[in-house]
Length: 124
Image (cartoon, rainbow, N blue to C red; front, top):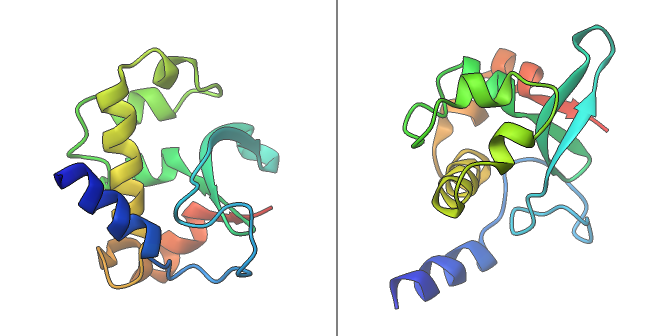
């Protein structure tokens, strides 16, 4: 029952990140992938709207401190191999934390920090 309530809450949740209503990447669909941004090379990411969300930048800012793995070590790499080798609970915890950081009215540590937003959200 608890899982169903969490899914229902996420299903109706909105993000503070501005995006088109028909985006392929709303808060309910946070894919994992890799993007490249010039001099920084390949970076582990998710996407929301028209933005890549730099997972390494989030880890370096301490916003993944509660995850059950060393997020800095995992997301510093240019591939998702280390992350994908983790177990399903680690993936779920990461997605839950991303939802907390990106949901409107939730954890304001990212939304409320303009410099951090600039480092984490990269236009696609």
